[in-house]
Length: 471
Ligand code: NAD
Image (cartoon, rainbow, N blue to C red; front, top):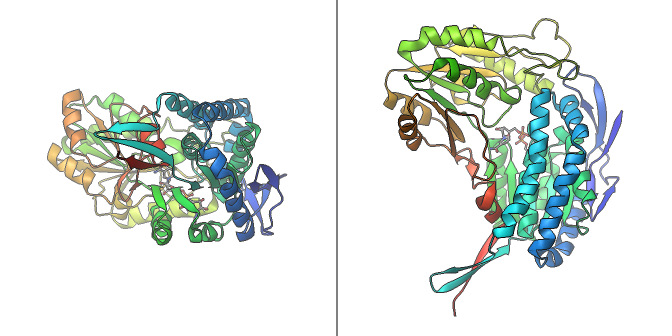
């Protein structure tokens, strides 16, 4: 049984002042695997003090010093990769391949920031002025449970690169993974107080942060509901805000696409990370004239997505992260049935032989209308809604008729045609005939999928405040 100290303040792991002890259950079998003692308001105030004390010296540190810290963190994460993969499987239920990718990308994110920093000019000439990009100050970083290492890395790396100090509030539902990442950051030898972590109940930790004028930046990745709540609270002290929120991404298969490629890719886009991915392509838009072939291929290819325990088998889909997630997905499947969508694959309940953990059946609905709940709301599990369209314009209209705009996918036999569709989509990223990730290009959403961007220079500049000097 693991015991997790949820507080890292002023360069040290400490026993929290908070006393609430919470069990961490493995999604693989519902058994207790660890206990975390939550941090409280007092712990958070200490973290703010430490970040405040460390800020002047760190904001004045050289680029070379910060590059060295970033590279060291990257190396530390690589050296703990097996621990991280193990924790991501046991605590979260990720398939092996995904667990490996998701944690290695955390290491490369720090290395990428270091590389980017080498060429970044903090002073630029703009017309007759010189513009100095100053560190924004103390950044409070909030991260979710479905991409623990990656979302911590993307924020902490940019904040360090900018010369900001940090209070990290990871998801309490990914405490083991967050703990290892924090140990890697600690092992890199940053000055005390530069990165602090308080893990615990969201509302409890958030309150003193939001009320504090010294905290000048929040970067939040999580649900749209909580993101909006924090943005409202942030405005009272005029904190700068970056929000990376939910999605309901459309995947348009054009009528000239090779379905033998497009359909397996569509399933991968929908079911990645056990379907618990903000970027999941969960609305599949297919030409009405091709629906029979689409159905045949979806049924055939879905059989490849074997559900199982990733700690003992090479499963493509593991369990959902929690009982709450399991219940949520069951409710959505029921809602699809109630609203008259047709079940093509999967359905309610657990797959045979996997009754103990939080496993669900990967599910595909066809005949979905865009006004159904399963087409409008982020389900956050392996449930794909298939909608059909008659014309390209109609496909674009359906794709854009969503509260969200994080990601979109287009498949076509002709790149120029796909590009023309991509130009008309309201989404922060559009992938054409690929599922590739570009870690240096901006990542973030239109509409309710967020505010601001992470990754690359755009991501770095979310932690910088421009000051114009005119002589
Ligand atoms: P969540 O909003 O429940 O939690 C995110 C963070 O906010 C956690 O640290 C949590 O402790 C904290 N929190 C929760 N309730 C709070 C409250 N009332 N006050 C203050 N803080 C609170 O999100 P989640 O369930 O952890 O993550 C899943 C969501 O994250 C999905 O909607 C997914 O799409 C989104 N997500 C977005 C991206 C992206 O880059 N756009 C990436 C990953 C996940």
